[in-house]
Length: 263
Image (cartoon, rainbow, N blue to C red; front, side, top):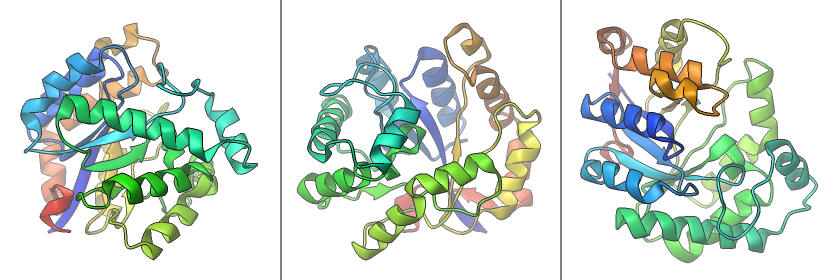
């Protein structure tokens, strides 16, 4: 039996996403969720999540592209990727923004995040990854905090971009500094493709011990919101809440576990 983390991203983005994640937690279908704190309804959504603090890992989904940021203007993903690669962004300002989002998280959850990752994987970009590690050393190193490492095999163009944006470099820094992180990573796929069930079965067959699978569930009526992947979210929620998901975990000998339970 291999122990894996199944993490639902984007908690706090809108009610349909947050409610879907809460429903899956109640069914024991997730072992982690990653929270956006940059939306006006974060305080209310945090209250929904608070009863589950001891059931799953709850982390910060560090965000520089969505909602209203605390210290700096939100940027488009393309611009952020380009400017980070060219080192045209300020590490100090990124650190200030991270501190602010951590403050928002801790104010409502009454604890530090169990882990940190990045919305649209921005946490591994050049400059930004150094800002995260600097804040970790100043503020978080005494707490049991781990980071999401997205380093994985290149299987398609989307995965190529994620790897190119800094996955391997970030992993090297985590290893060098002996900072906890997941052993392997899966969850990247073409959101336009149908049959999430088959996609996830492939993830279960390939993920290794201590690995993390990322998912993005949401309720079907999430199509009412301005969310480019709303349809895919509904498909993920349907599968993850089904008996087929349970049977697939048994078939591929995968057990959902919090990071602390085997780290």
